[in-house]
Amino acid sequence: MSYIKTASTLIEEACLNTNNHAVCDNIDLDTILIEYENYYFLRYQKKPQISKSLDIAKSDTLNATKNKTKISKKSNTNQHSQDIQTIDTNFITVTPINICNESLEEYCLPSIDLGYWKDEWRVYAEIISKEILVTNPNVKWSDIKGLSTPKKLLDEAIVLPTKYPDLFTGLCTPWAAMLLYGPPGTGKTLLAKAVATECKTTFFNITPSTLVAKWRGDSEKLIKVMFEMAEQMSPSTIFIDELDTIASKRIDHEASRRLTSEILIHMDGLLRSEKRIFLLATSNHPWELDPAIFRRLEKRIFVDLPDVKARKDMFVYYLSEMLQKHKYIKCDIDSDSLAQETNGYSGADIRLVCKETAMQAMRSIFQVLEKKADNKINFTITTKDVNNAISKTKPSTSEADNNKYKIWQSQYASC
Image (cartoon, rainbow, N blue to C red; front, side, top):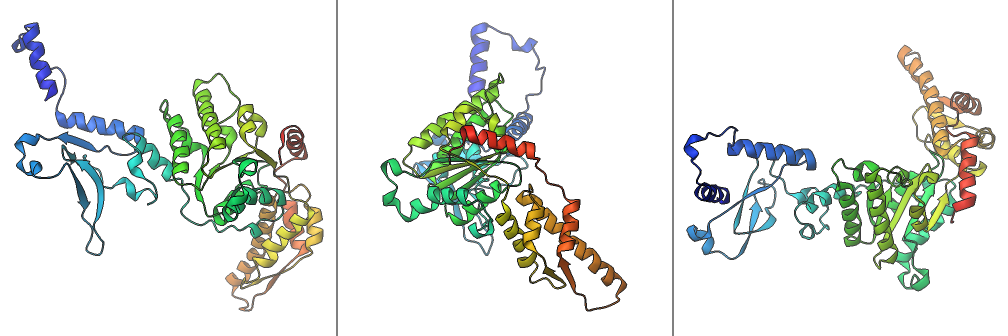
């Protein structure tokens, strides 16, 4: 209506003769709506909710109602009806073309206060809420062999403050931010899964792809929403995997500088906050981190390659314990000698060795089953079989790479 009035005023004041002019473009309302929907979906990965203003003076029904009303969503015969949202009576929702009428609450946890987020901020809240872990990873501290120092500090930062809140006050406030760094496959992400399992906090599982957006300014908004949502749902844990990919040393790229600055701002607020929010980050290349970032990470822990005892425990866990109930495969190994043979192997490498050993046994079993020679199949894995798998599986981390981590540890570690 405003456009029509504007056009009339322009014609009158400019003394234009519109009869001598013709429209040179398609201004059909449906076309405009479709183009806007396509743009909105391209940017936010969802269809927009479009509202149309109503004339209250011409609507006797709306005059008889209160200022606000609730629209209820019709449910199936076996479902209860529920309120979707509260809107002003001055507006009526118009369902966009080719869009499923789903509310944002269906994507977020019930504990998220969606009323806090307005307009476009609600879109970012939806993106972050999808990264909240709602399934149990089922990784316990006992499942992680070795790594006693990281487990102890994570316990101090998250578990013990919940049990003894009166003790963690003043200078003894819990650790707010921690960095786990080391070679790939040493258990950094596994520790994060154990935190999600054991610590009973709201767990944000954030990856670089979650925070990096193609539109200018969207990445900073996602970071802001992430920290504010963590504060709303405290106690909470924010886990950022591969932090060095989004917070590397400040280079000339403007977007990288803005992203790093936004992280620094919220990390400062995190250290001063009275809410129980814990930031856990991992990195395979800690020397690439911005110095201002790792200064704000109170604990910087080197997750080293497993020692002899940890390697022995891994062989016992993967081969003896996990194959204990297998129908055809048994295990009889010398875990001490195998631990000595795998010096320089990471936890992920040892798991691959054990899997290759089990698959070798399965290949022998398949041959017997295909020939149908004997129904009584019993295959025992020996130390020789494991050594054969070790010869086929090389360590993923070289000694030179591991020494590079140790040099950085001697300069910047805080454990």
